[in-house]
Length: 163
Length: 227
Image (tube, rainbow over all chains, first blue to last red; front, side, top):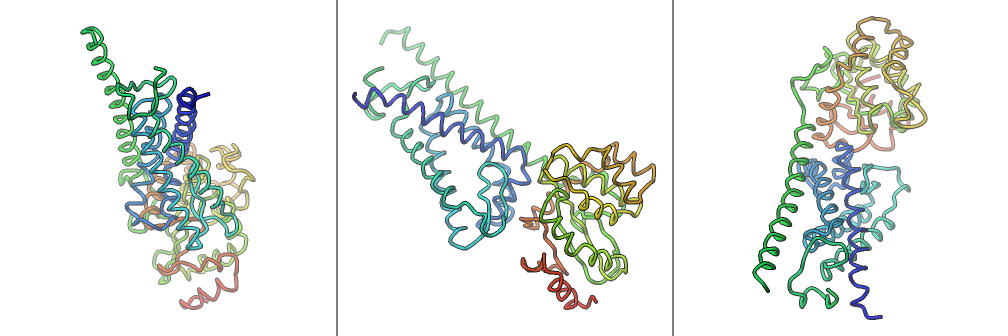
């Protein structure tokens, strides 16, 4: 079977996967903003004021991008945003790991310092790298099944000879 | 492409842009809402022993020279451990008037933390905060937000802690200090408090290893002249 036949379905799966993860992660964080702020501060990267702002704002952007991906609107931009965000998380978690901080990534709510030995850095990094790949795939092949986006030119957006 | 198709396509694009615009609008409104609802609000009711200059914490012994700040969440298990190890010692220092202590009850663990903190603030008005603080940790439910802490159970706890005043009961019932907890949380965010318990002695953060080591904690206090 040719790739072109599967590609719209793979795109759909990637959209749902990345979209649901972003939507859920955003919702759980927006629900407890104080904890989300604490999670960002615990990375010890940004100045406190900026970290607190990020903790409040980021969940809403995650939910927005997740929603757009699920319904298939502005897929390329949302996917790019999602992939960039995941890479940012990978970088943030890696530096925490390298510096020997003991924190929870706070990816799905929670966050802040945890007892030494209770960190899950490797799983968190691998998960976020996997999600980055779905975002990259969506950027390359944004047109899938059941999406609202319509693409006029098919030449640069993957093989869409089916449609 | 026929004219009709062209018009349909233009309509599609417009609708699509409107939908994207709506999502962006909702995101921005959400950010704004989050931002405004997590700021300190100087208009909320606060207990008499609370002041903005002390980060909206409950202040005991306001004239003592050594200042201790303590950030805890009444539902946080590590705070309970800390309380079990050092609670009696710290309470004795407070009762003897040797330290000024500022309690910052945080509420990030959830709704029952808010109920507990607001109830504790009510007991501050009748001078029973320290007893209520101890009682809350002694009776910390095994699971967070499990429904164990309600205004009714917290009223009973206040009574068992020795606060039998009717004012306290009605204060708990009415949720008088619910919004105050938001101010405490916002101030802790500004001060970069990232875990509980966090203790500052004269503005200096306690060594992480000293929280569960009473001897080390006593030495820290001795170093600032508290014996």
